[in-house]
Image (tube, rainbow, N blue to C red; front, side, top):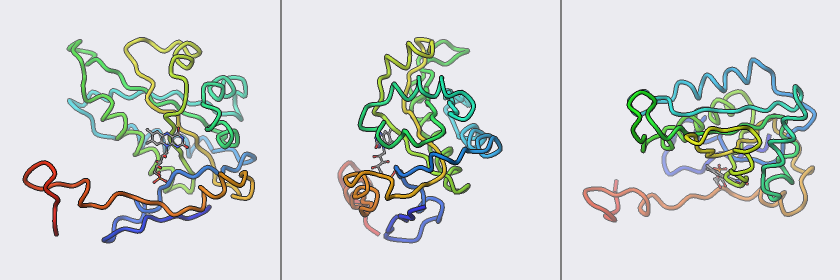
Length: 201
Ligand SMILES: Cc1cc2nc3c(=O)[nH]c(=O)nc-3n(C[C@H](O)[C@H](O)[C@H](O)COP(=O)(O)O)c2cc1C
């Protein structure tokens, strides 16, 4: 796998530093059921507001059902299809926007679903797999194709598989794959005492 560990200002856990959104998947190597179960279990243990666990996932395994994987793949934007075509697994993360027992709006559902997906992505890194989340898909098409109830919001598709060879990508994607990972400076995004007052060490 192309390793692109985050260049951090202070040391962080190596699992967090190593997770990244690569695009070069090994299309010939299936993901084992045991690994998939571990990913789902990791997502399942995410924290959630009132313990609602508002996330739901649909998984498509090309090596089990090429037909349904293809239906999910067809919902991706063309810019994602060019590389996600080699990912043997696709997932969809959905957020349930209503507390099931109270029947009131759950304004934390999407926050919680993101946390569950990050758990899944980190577990993928721990297992030597690669997960790449995608907002670039047609939510209406996915809703229609997979009979998704109206109170669940499709949040992100996730391409997953074993890492593959970077030279399998076209030149533009290869460049992106090898480019340095970047983040905003800490002072721009973390405040102390009040809004826009940069935190200092
Ligand atoms: C909700 C969400 C949507 C994203 N959508 C796309 C996408 O449609 N296509 C894509 O190539 N990457 C997508 N990404 C990946 C981001 O571009 C990537 O996480 C970001 O550039 C940081 O890179 P890193 O994950 O390697 O640290 C998405 C990530 C998230 C969390």
